[in-house]
Amino acid sequence: MGEFKTSIQRQKITAVVVDDDSKSVDLLCHHLKTYCPELTLSGIANSLDEAILLIDKTKPELMFLDIMLNSDTGFDLLDIVNQNDAEIIFISSFDEYALKAFKYSPVDYLLKPIDIKELLMAIARARESIQQKREKNEQQNLRDYIAVPGRKIIQIVRIAEILYCKSDGNYTTLYLKDREKIVTIKNIGGFEKILPNDIFMRIHKQYLVNFNYVKSIHKSDGFYCHLFDKTMLPVSRRKQEELQQRLEGKNI
Image (cartoon, rainbow, N blue to C red; front, side, top):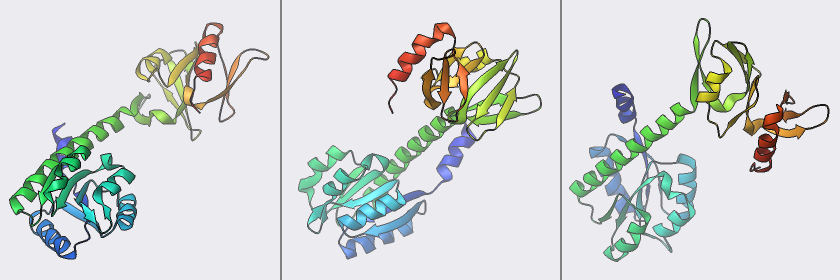
């Protein structure tokens, strides 16, 4: 875990500046270049429309945001874009907007002219929050995969890529979206335990299916579920009602 955190911390932080005052922008950029080598400035916007395009394109982790943007405000911008994706440091010439600003959960609200110590302290808090977000996202990504033991190798497989699992005694074959098949020495009961039960369902003693890929149920000539890749899988009698209920409640 120590190596993981170190790797996260080495990544540079992407930032944008949104301000219509060119002198303030120049001064802030000078401070960032001089004192904050861990930041990568992805762009500068001088208006609301420019800022929307810039944020959509660069998806910054940190925003330095002025309150007044010509006839618009930084609040207008945050009401349009998803501000939860970036840490916000407000920079303004007016202290009367501070109370409203903190409704947007910023890292800090700095007044112009910028005090360097206050700026660096705000960036340090933003960096800590960004690192926590990165670690959380990385941990979530790791939970999206499982280790699949084979006879000679262990493969790492993304859970969302698994269409279904088929039992063959003590072995299980995983059928993936790209039509690849993986034979594993783990039995299907083992996969039933480790795969998320809100996504996977044991529909038969021989089959464990990714419910996201079930397209329909066929009741003629037996009871089968039809997958999006046209695979037909049998459904045991005791699982038929549960499968129908889950399919009826599925959000499409």
